Amino acid sequence: MSDVHVRGVRYEVDRPLLADIDLVLRAGEMTALSGPSGSGKTTLLSIVGGLLEPTAGEATYDGASTWRGTGDPRPEVAFVLQVYGLVPILSARENVSVALRARGVDPVAADEQAVAALTRFHIADLADRQVEELSGGQMQRVALARGLCVGAGVLLADEPTSELDEGNRALVLAELRREAERGAVVVVATHDPAVVDACDAHHALDDGRLVDHTEPVHLPGHPEPAPEPGPPSRHPSPAPEPAPEPAPEHQHEPEQHRPEQHQPPAPVDHSAFRRPPAGR
Ligand SMILES: Nc1ncnc2c1ncn2[C@@H]1O[C@H](COP(=O)(O)OP(=O)(O)OP(=O)(O)O)[C@@H](O)[C@H]1O
Image (tube, rainbow, N blue to C red; front, side, top):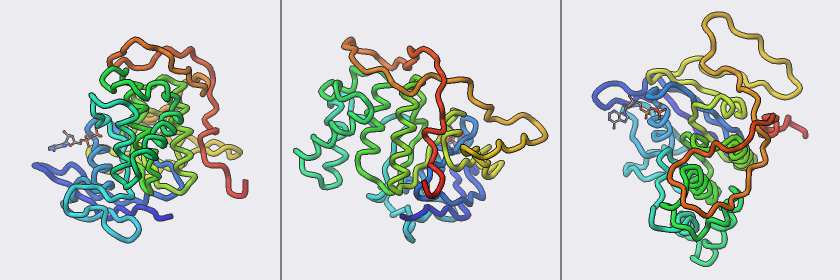
């Protein structure tokens, strides 16, 4: 298990987009990266994953820079992109299978593993549907299946729950937790306070800089941290949420980019997604 170290990272295009970024993204943990739109979350994930070369500083994983000089990520890195990056005319299974074949898995095994990955996100029944026929939330889960199926050491997810209803968000958080528990560095860029709350660590960006550097996350069995004086937090406590049982997918009408918003509200215990205390 190796952490990701981000040291002195600055990134400029025609102006500074990131400055003075120093942080450690720990293996075995889920780390939230929050901040307003345009604050630099995607840019930072891209540097951490080796898609962008920082103007100054570096991100390292396992002792080596994540930037390989080409813009291609290292094989240990997997992304779940905000725009999904799926091939619309391929099936859900093929989109996942391609990622496995690219890592040397033979085609038959890749297809089997792809269906298993889709099953993790309760969309195995959509395996043979062309991605362009799927709803936004279904596409997002195909992208998650593709990102999580390869057993990456560093998993970088950009707004992975933006299109999901509450039940599927809970499912995705549980699957991201599984990735952390097998030792991966899991980083989630998000606007969703419930996702932040489910993470072990939290870094907030504002205008390309880290602010409130790391907020403690309340762990089960520990007292709630005292509220900080001053202006209200940008991450208010989440409202009561629905149960984590996602609805099975049996719809057969094509749905185009509709957020999944059809679950009735019910309480969710977010402690289920958190890492259990040591010794458990
Ligand atoms: N290639 C680029 N050239 C110039 N500016 C860019 C480029 N890519 C991103 N930016 C700018 O960098 C800033 C940070 O963008 P970024 O996508 O990292 O923000 P974000 O926090 O991920 O936003 P969102 O929550 O909306 O996804 C924005 O002001 C954006 O306009």
